[in-house]
Length: 105
Image (cartoon, rainbow, N blue to C red; front, top):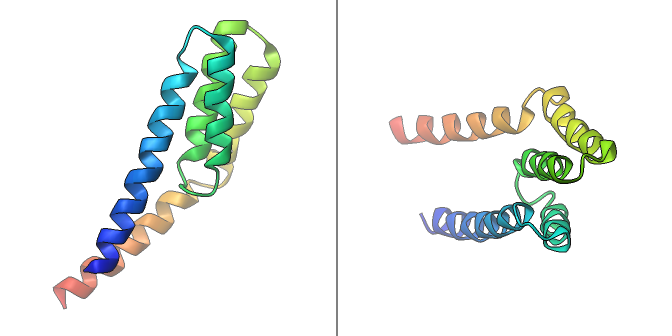
C-alpha cells in the first residue's frame, strides 16, 4: 500500500504543476502565458495528459494573438493524441484492470 501513497503524492505534485502552468496560460500578459507553456513543456513525459494541456495552451495563445503558428502547434498536439489512439488511456485502463483483478482474486 505504501507504493500507492508514493504514486499519489507524485501525481499530486505533477497535477499541481500542471494547474499552475495552465493558469498562467490564461493570463492577459503574453510573457506569463509563454512561461506557462514552457512549464508545460518541462512537464512532458511526467504525465500522459501533457499533450492535451500543451495543445490547449497553444489554442488559448492563438485566441490572444491570432498567430497561425500557435494554432498549428495546438493542432499538432491534438493530432498526436488522436494518432496515438489515446494510448495513454489504454495503458491506464490496463493498469487499473490488473489492480482490480488482483483485489478480486
